[in-house]
Length: 531
Ligand code: 1PR
Image (cartoon, rainbow, N blue to C red; front, side, top):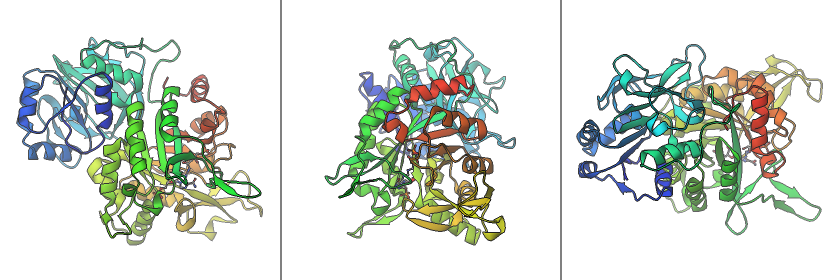
């Protein structure tokens, strides 16, 4: 299988999927490799302009166009599908390969649609399904802000559509040329079977959804989170805090909780049905992740076994190590993407960036958040917020957005604001979660991971007031985090707030509530979920 990887993001999972099926990969190093290819997979990642730029610089545009025009076996994934169209409008008008009539335009968010479209959505099959045979009723994983729509001119190409606000093209096919807007390599067993079928194989398991578990629309995601840190021997272990304190206090000593090995836990959560897995390197702020080779190794190994999206956070910032070597945050992110991450998550550095932006009213373009989202697209950048609740008697006491609380504070306070913190909750900053969320959205964040220090590890439920405040304030998806203790907490957060996903750690690590049970419960409560 020939793979066209222009080095702009995570194609490790596509590689892993192809290798899992027993194929050898030949990388495209120049136009000749495309000419000689017998099966070509093009997993486009990053921005439309960056992809076109890179293909042009490497002299690949003509070879690619000819390959597709000659109807040779081709599978374009995400941007790999989009580039088949005439143009993209991601950063102004940029010409594509011009094979399929039409252009790639942004989802219309004017009616409150959260953009990027991130998550597991249903397919509507339009032709005899070819590579999509058997996926009827299943969800597949999308992550994008731009899409093509069906028109009379491109109708004969459309293999499947999906609905997000309005209908858009989810897969195309003509002869041997295929493209998927979703990521088969991130769509679990369903997705792996799509790749297997493209490669001429036969799907391994029965795939069609069981009655009552049929995909209808975008599902609410359930995310398993692994907080990791280095133990005394230098190995990365999964730990879990109680209000961010990860130490077990005994009478004689304090030890950091060790709940298992990151790769083993990640793959068992994948098998259990997690829609995504997130790794947070909780002491990453102390050092540069590029000095943290175990974390990169964890990602590489996890992506061999986990075929749903992986997010990694901790320590993403510009950094000079003790030997004077400078690492830009873009380099750090690039290494994470190359190692298997689909999204990176920025914590402390995004707080400083938002503070500066609010103070000056100017975007500098230099912050890690802006740079990474410019190069990789904002769908690849999550901002993780670690707020702590601060009670006040009246909203006029603070220059931050407050909420009226259902349970008053210790001195009868009726209001609270949510103070952002940095360095794993160690330092409070002069900015509220509401102000931060709005600022990072403008600076290029594609999603918000909304933790809550007060609720973390308590198992008493998500802070619904906080989740509602933030998810109503921004147009990007919000992941509610911290406090899940029962299956009802998941249905509560999805019925009472517009959160797009819910993340939990402790209940999964302690095996109190399996992921499958959460999903059965959500489904019974009428909340779309992926099985
Ligand atoms: O600041 O860019 O280096 O990123 C550091 C990252 O590490 C941030 O995303 C921050 O949230 C995370 N972090 C730092 N210290 C801790 C800690 O626990 N001491 N973990 C920490 C944050 C919160 C969630 C947790 C949920 C669900 N953990 O990720 O998994 O609260 O837990 P639960 O279901 O058990 O309640 P930077």
